[in-house]
Length: 376
Image 1: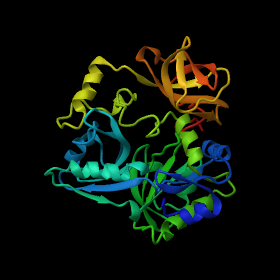
Image 2 (image 1 turned 45 degrees about the vertical axis):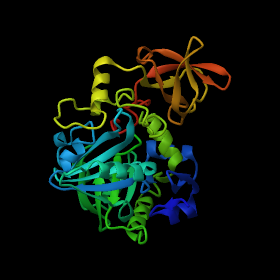
Image 3 (image 1 turned 90 degrees about the vertical axis):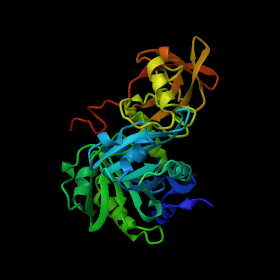
Image 4 (image 1 turned 30 degrees about the vertical axis):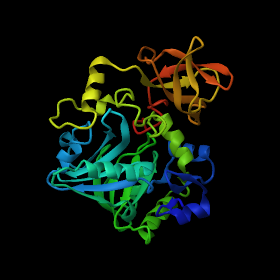
């Protein structure tokens, strides 16, 4: 039987339910396109409580994370969030994560829903003799994302803290409508906004999460704000050029192949699983490289389709969709490194036809008009 999040009763009443990552979650409420456009132009509210949340505390907490991540947690300032990956011994990505750093001795790591048990076991198995305590707080906290150009101003109405004082990827403890939360200026849509961890909220007593959810929807009722499901979350993250675990990255792909080398710190002292393999790839290169591409003359790319050059397969699509913002097909895939340069032309086999596509940079959209860098 699939699990249910803190906000399942709302989803069951208003949304189209599907199973994802072992959870019953909303695929949409109105339509994927409506919800996608609401986030790009106004704001949208997502339940992301299905994702795992592990508290990591103790005097060796930073060393522990440095023994797991290719990133260097000691270089991250307090009250900041950072993106990284957990790798296996061959450098393959076990999961990608966002971690909140409160201090050198206190963190919360957020992991993908389908990987909660796998990640927990991996972390426990790599504690060694370090003075660190791990606690799974997933079922005792809720996680809500409020994303879009209106999200910050609307959320400010119920927050006891000046939200504009929180920079991108910074975090703070505050109260939303008198409910204790930790908010981080992060997200999976490319837009401005916050991810809200509602504290002291067990699944059996979700009142606090429901209160914030309904309050934010009420504030945006006449401003174009919509509750959003997994469908819009996927199309939004793809337009932003972000990876989906299980599609674009997995245990067979390394951070270097995945174009995530910016998170790898080669100077830190601690070792981590896969370090030698990853640093060898940094020096000598790889046999494939993740790209983003935009269709030139119609066609909607889908996972598993072939990427071709002169009728010869040179790679495969890992994510693809119709972009509601650009009104055309976009995708992510892997090709030989020499074909990965922006501006290169390839073709995607859509059904029986080879359709032209161009390698592009991400995000796909015009950042002066959309996303957290937009010009107001």
